[in-house]
Image 1: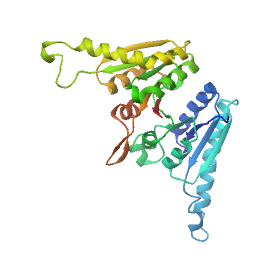
Image 2: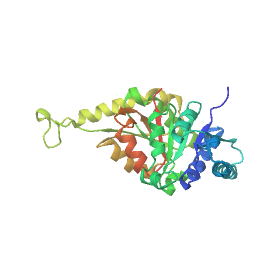
Image 3: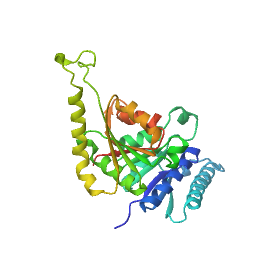
Length: 291
């Protein structure tokens, strides 16, 4: 059976080169081939250039230089990882979504080239994460998180109907890294119930915390048995998941959450937790859709 590759979107930006570095290390840990993809539209419009114009040629040369430079960087980082390149005549999001249909995961940088993309942090990553059918890793964060110095993978435990594949991914990642898996389930009181005015005069916090712990037991029971070498730290916390996970990402090398795409007026959108992590996490973020 052919191994699915780890696909990396490259565009010549510093962020995409950081994503290449991260992806090479990940491919080495997982024993996966690496596929570096640059999406551009020059090939589609090559015949439309005015006579004597060098624009299509210059775009082609730029595309070839970008993928060649990314491939050289990948091979310098690890000569053991099988690396291939591809120039795809498509818009970036469409290209990465198509590549993701036959990939283990898609990896992108947190920012792309150009002024507009700098004003919209992770715009390609957000769009791909909202629609991809495979895991999407957006590489961002501080130096320690990018270097894997914390020896810890953080899993934000969601609901059972959307979290199963994310849980398995997180366990596999922790096992491949030989590190601790920090599993966090965040709970909060309903709006009608507050710490100052408990419902019907009762403090229901112990019940909420117990339910959160029981949900963790349900999510982790089977997967824990499949990965006995992974050390798991379980935590239940009261608060807002997006704040808790962003804060805890400061001590993690990767944060994993289940992706739950939502459809709104602007098309495919991610939930608040995923959106917050993609913009504020201090380590790379893996969004794993439930298949």
